[in-house]
Amino acid sequence: MMSGARRAQGAGRARRAGRAGRRAAVNTERRATPRPERGGQTPPSARKEPPRARPLLQRRRVRPRGRRPRERPRELLTPGGAAARTARPGANFPAASALGAGGAPELAAATAAAGPVHRQLPLPGASAFGRECPEPQLQAVAAASGHTVMLVDQTDEILAKSKKGIEESLRKVAKKKFAENPKAGDEFVQKTLSSITTTTDAASVVHSTDLVVEAIVENLKVKNELFQRLDKFAAEHTIFASNTSSLQITSIANATTRQDRFAGLHFFNPVPVMKLVEVIKTPMTSQKTFESLVDFTKALGKHPVSCKDTPGFIVNRLLVPYLMEAIRLYERGDASKEDIDTAMKLGAGYPMGPFELLDYVGLDTTKFIIDGWHEMDSKNPLFQPSQSLNQLVAEKKFGKKTGEGYYKHK
Ligand SMILES: NC(=O)c1ccc[n+]([C@@H]2O[C@H](COP(=O)([O-])OP(=O)(O)OC[C@H]3O[C@@H](n4cnc5c(N)ncnc54)[C@H](O)[C@@H]3O)[C@@H](O)[C@H]2O)c1
Image: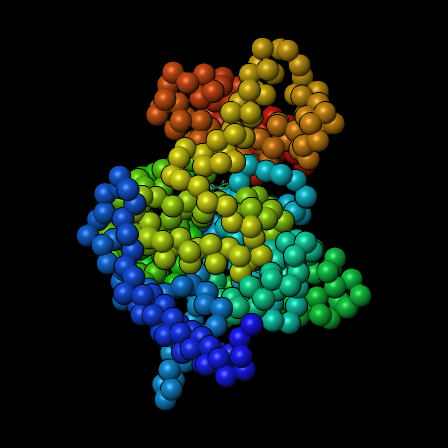
């Protein structure tokens, strides 16, 4: 046992050691520079983290004495806001597992809702997650204060439709969440909506954004053109992320000069309901960028998982071959699509059958994915194209978004 004096001496030493340790930790952090991944080529821009880069969502900001905090909007840019799927009537967030997020309007709503609004009220994106784990999520979302979202698409008409879709979605959420207090529900909708603005010119607003989440058409050339342009106008610290379901993140990142600040951020449809976000790290993505995005998804009330830049990441790599197998079963005449859907719902416990899911996701998007994988590995039996899928897409029957796919929709 230690005597009183020796205990006091020991405690003093421990305090001094603690202070020194903390100083050392701070200094190490200051010195730390991102390390290239093994086997990955490090572009010049990845060798040194830009001096202004910082976590997107800092839980606590320590302000140096005598300096005023910089007034800066924490903006999020979401090109592809049009993704008319959320704007379409009837898309009321069914609790279904689905192929992916798409729908930038839903993404916009969820992120805007995770902004200042959450200080006062529950949110669509956070609420589903919050039921399981209220405290940490509430703190995380509260830390994400000050988000503003800029929704970008090609025409004002698409943007107006998207914003209307967001409002309808939010009203449905508010009706449920604030059944006892409609006034608070209205306030929630208005506050969230006021955090979302729209534009058709991403380049003119990207200079003031911290994060760009792209959810435009699943086409590498179009995505590359957009990012190449935005790269010229974006601030040095701005992180770029793609919501692509199937394209290689590295090949999108290579269109820019900020490969270290580029990653995949794959949301799932419907975004306010689905908890998962796949965060994709390429060999060039810096650890700091990766961690910022993980923090960001947590602040939205989502559950991030990490995956390498491999085709389909985790979910779609398993899900798309399953959907294609269901199509092949139907094409061979082994079972009707209705019976296949029923079988997977009642027999496997899936919330949607594969054909319902295909129509929900969009047949055009699924065809983009499978065609891309077939091109990459034409011998793989899981990646073979489908005659019925090709036919429906050629007829512009894309599923729910066009009113017809494998099924007819009202
Ligand atoms: N559909 C899904 O369930 C799903 C799920 C997860 C991820 N994703 C991914 O999200 C992205 C969008 O998917 P989608 O199904 O919503 O596609 P979509 O083709 O239905 O919608 C794309 C939207 O992007 C807009 N757009 C096209 N080029 C643009 C540009 N240069 N600038 C701004 N806007 C532009 C279009 O006007 C359209 O509104 C794809 O990368 C897809 O892989 C989709």
